[in-house]
Image (cartoon, rainbow, N blue to C red; front, side, top):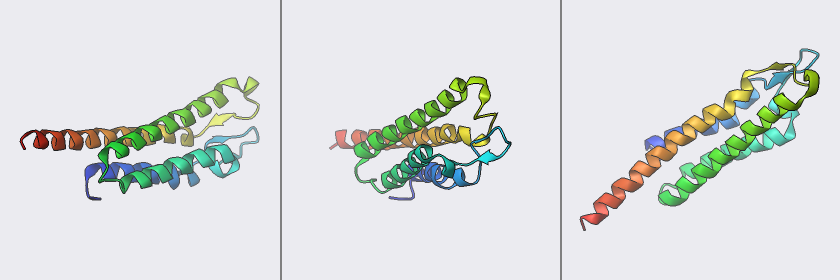
Length: 136
C-alpha cells in the first residue's frame, strides 16, 4: 500500500537524495566556485544509490521485514556518506580544497531523519500485525 506514512517518508528521502543534490552546492573551492555533486563521482554514486534504495523500499510493502532491513542499510549508507563529508572537511590541511562548506553537506542528515521516521512506522505496522495474529 503506497499511501502509508512510511511510503511518504521514503519518498521524501528519495527526493532529497536524488533531486535536491543537483540544486545545492556541497562546498566552495578556493576560487570561490561552488562544487556540486556532479563534480565528485563517488558522492554522486552514494547519493543516487540511497535514492534508488529508498524508491525500491517503497514498493516492498508486502514484506515489511525486508523493508525494515533495507531502510537500515540506507541509513548506514547515509551515515557513511556523512562520514566521508566530515573526513574531507577535517583532513584537508589548511583548507586548500574545501574553503567554505555548503548546505549540501547536510543532505545526508535530512535523509537519515526521514529514513528513521519511515523505519519507526514500518516497525509500528509490523507490531500491529503481530498483535492481530495473536488473537487468531
